[in-house]
Each structure stands twice: as structure tokens, then as C-alpha cells.
Image (cartoon, rainbow, N blue to C red; front, side, top):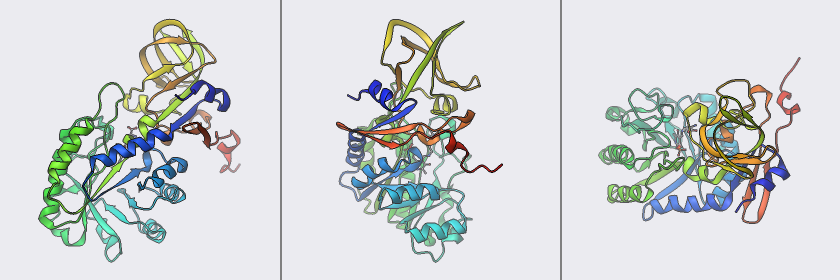
Length: 375
Ligand code: LLP
């Protein structure tokens, strides 16, 4: 058990805390899904780009899905070997940078991008859009024709001889198996038709934020049946599934305000965890030191706008001001989407590995907010 209150006392709040043991366990579970296949796992750095976490993954043989020079540098710092470059806005100067650093796969997002890669020695995957509804939040759904990603799967005939394989990613936090299998089977049919030896299946496996999560065993059965006679290589590109449940946001309780509603005011705001306001996301809360009295409260941050809400209408024990509360499932798209809004420095990050506790990113200082400013 991680002693979050002690970590809050030792390192201050807000604080992101990650559990190395849980990360390794989740990688093991992901691998289990592809048992018996020629398959590799790459981690989507957008979910969490801290090189100390990436190093754990690299040691487990996990590669990287990167979308920027910054993410590429983090993957290299961590020693990640296999690298996939994704994105719908690549330009030729970036291509030089990425190919010089040695990457293995590129996911090409459009017919217009193809000429950028003609004659380049790299495994070329074309991202296809299977027109499948992932039935997740609209902002994180990507597999419908109306979305900006990929090319229509039925139109690849004219470019089939210029690519080595296909890539599909229909969205994130998907909790039903059917949309995955629907998309995978369309891509598999296409790969078989043209003899492609590589399929990147994307990410999107949903985790349990509020009782709903993807049935991994059912997904495994579906994948096993579907790909049983495919002898090419499969790539799985997971973000949230690997780090989401392994991360926590620890916030300090500043005060408990009683007005028309009860508001628990914390030192973490939408600058620290933007998912609740951006996607209406639900993060379970643990009160560490409570008064024994339960209320329905909004948990809010210190920023100057009404959207600065971390949890709405939550039944919880009133926490004691000065103590800490914990938001679960904050390991993915937590720190990586944090900002300096309202002049707030980025929080510190801690890695717990069994009995070992390590500061893996110092809290940003106020002065660091202005290092690039000239007046
Ligand atoms: N591959 C591609 C091409 C992606 O665009 C993504 C995520 C992934 C893999 C990893 O997906 P995952 O396994 O994490 O679902 N900020 C949002 C999530 C945005 C996901 C963007 N793409 C959130 O906080 O829910």
C-alpha cells in the first residue's frame, strides 16, 4: 500500500505518484492478449512521457509510439528500441530529424503524405479509417469517416504497392469489444488482400474509471480467433491501459466551503488534471483523513473559472483541511496534459517501486515559468 499522505508531506502537493509494479503487471496483461502471435507492444507517449516511467517499459521490451521530437527524445532517453512515428502533420524537416535518429515504422496519415516517404528506408504503414463508431467520448473517437485521421480503407488500391502494412486506431477509452473486432477484421481483410506483413492495431483499451471497462479476456478471444491464420507482425499501441490505473494525483485540501453546495477546494485544479472538465471524465477519489461526516460535494481547484472542477456531486467524507486526497486512474493523460494556466507551476512526479520511492520530476519553480521570456 502506498502511503499517499506521507508522500504529500514529504514532497508537497499537487503530486503525481506512479506505481512501477502495477506498470509491469499491466504490460504483462497486455502481452498475454497477444500470446502465440508475432506481436510487439509500443507505448503511446502522449499518455505519459516521463522518461523514468518509459525506462521501466523499455526494460520490459516495450517500444514507443511518438508524435513529436519531444516524445522521440523522451523515448531515446529511456532506451526504448522500437519506435513508431505517428501523426497527421509531418513535414520534411521533421522527417530528416526522425530518420536520422533511427525509427522503425512510420504511420502515414494521408495520400498526400506518401511522397514524403518514397525512397526512404523505413517500414511504411498507412493509417486507414475503417468507419467504425468506437462509442466513446466524441473528442477521443477517431475511426469515423468524419474524423481527420487516416484514409478510407476502400480506397487504398492505387497505393498498395508503396506501403508495407496498415495502421488503425478508432479511438480511446473504448469499453466494448465489438468496435475493436469490427475495425480489426476490416483491416485484416485488406492486409490479406494485398499481402501486407504488418498491422498496427492502435490503442484505445478502456480502463475502469467508474465501473465500466473493457473485457480483456473477450478481446483476447476475439483477436485469437480473428488473426489465427495471419502470419504477419501485429503491433499494439497502448497508452492508457498501461499507465492509467498505475498513476494517482495527490491533492492538498485547502478548505471545505459550505455555501449553496459544499465545495472541497484543493491545490490541484484543471491545470493539473484537465480530464474532468474537458471530457466529463470521472476519477474516483480517496479521502485520506476525514471528519467522519459524509456530504455531497464538488471537488474544485484554485483557478479563476467555474470550469475548474475535478469532481462533481460526489458523495464523500469531508476531508480535513491540510490533509491530502487522491484521484485514481490519473497515470494517463494527467501530467501529460497539465499546463501553466493561471501561472501555476507543473507538479512533481514520484515513482514508487515496492519499498523504493524516487522523485522522477521536480516540481517546476515559479522562476522556471519565465525562462524563455524577454522583456
Ligand atoms: N495510437 C494513436 C494513433 C493514438 O492517437 C492514441 C491516442 C493511442 C494510440 C493511445 O490510445 P490509448 O491506448 O491511450 O487509448 N487525452 C484523451 C485521450 C486522447 C487519446 C489520443 N490518442 C484523454 O485524456 O482521455
